[in-house]
Length: 207
Image 1 (cartoon, rainbow, N blue to C red):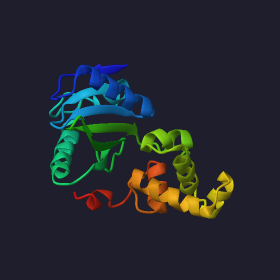
Image 2: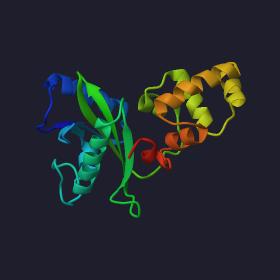
Image 3: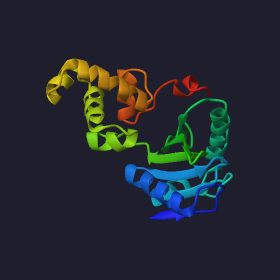
Image 4: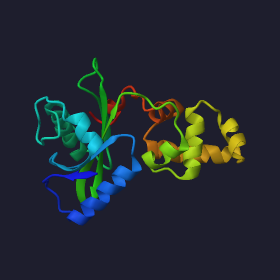
């Protein structure tokens, strides 16, 4: 079920409904919300509402806890000074009591910047399966197969053998996987695939 609230957007209600449905369908394991650049929630699935409405003081939008809203405000400020898409992660309510992990990513729809917010209980997925990795990072089937193998600790040669392809193909595909998953190496890919935090990630993105 998709919930709608008032928000600042040049997109039509039909556009927002399509975007919201696409977001929910692509990431069924987490709470998902679409926000305008001024941090107003345009659409949120039920899971996002249940996890974020916890009785704490609210921020710019009634769905967002004040501390999350402040973090998003800072993220938007950084986003405006960077080129291309940006993303960041935090624990909520804090690093000591990391009940939730919240990720935000900037996206441009019809030339208008928006934010995609994903929320999940801090329980890492047991296995980075192809079915989960492919829609989550927008990977092709082959990219998801390579990513899953590498995340599990297999060498390029082992991945090639399991998939029936040459090792050079694995290397080439892996470069594309690194780009789409926004990681620099195999270790970071494994952390991202298992949904674990990547040390120093925010500083590398300009925070």
